[in-house]
Length: 159
Length: 225
Image 1 (cartoon, rainbow over the protein chains, first blue to last red):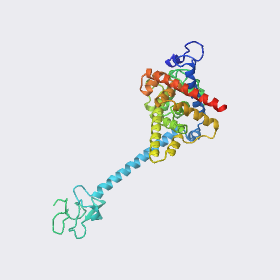
Image 2: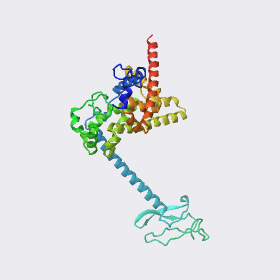
Image 3: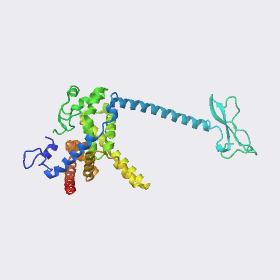
Image 4: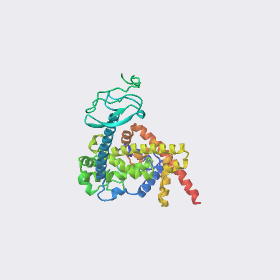
């Protein structure tokens, strides 16, 4: 006999179903019985899930479909993240190359760097000075550092 | 009724969810472990047997529904809550270890955790709505829709009144110990507390429920006059 049964075993022995004895007296059991009845009545009034009622829409099938969609969504998320990272890298230019001049001051053009089309060429604003080209532009020029009209490197750049 | 660990746990889909008894179609698959006939189904379902999975979930669904209602999940959310629990259980079936307990206890533990998260979400939403100056909307969010049927509405109100008399912890213990009729050890294992604590909290909860039942009866009598 489990302790659950023991708690319901009649103490004073009316030989009944335990509702009148054990730890819970008859009065105490009345609340539980009312709760049980309410639960049954509410449960009976709940609608069946539509996807369970429809043939061919079993839980197992639904889970498999959910898993497939999740895999697809995860793959799409990875692709989007990879594209985002690639865009960030290429937009900034290759490591060590290019000038970190505020974008608003620059005109960006597409050059081919190592066979990829990237916004690689940054040209210093008009009047600011010399042409800035990032390294390893196909057939391009040697790296240059943006310089002001007086030939001094712009702030934040290596001379 | 057995204590939940006996052979009467398994029942047919359309039989009373708390009555013991077998489903002839399921017996073939469920034969095996007498301590938990569902364990055999769970084992087969975990290996990808679709029919076993369907039978297992058909058996678990009504029991989980009643546990969900008794822990205080809003009735309109219960079908979704049970469905999500079964989907999670289906996904985790290959990892189910019958040595660690019954299938129903395992699934109900998932359900109770999800019900807690649901309640937390509702409370958070209600707080957010109140902070935006919409207390009425916050209440509506918790109450959700009401059924048209007067008897169904009465059942929901009675359930809500009784559960309101209990704390969240008492509701969980009443749901598993009194409504699902698990042993104190099983409830203790599922909720991470001591069996003596389960019995003690259940005793307090019974007392509170009895008081509330008396109040409801007095209210009904007054209404009839």
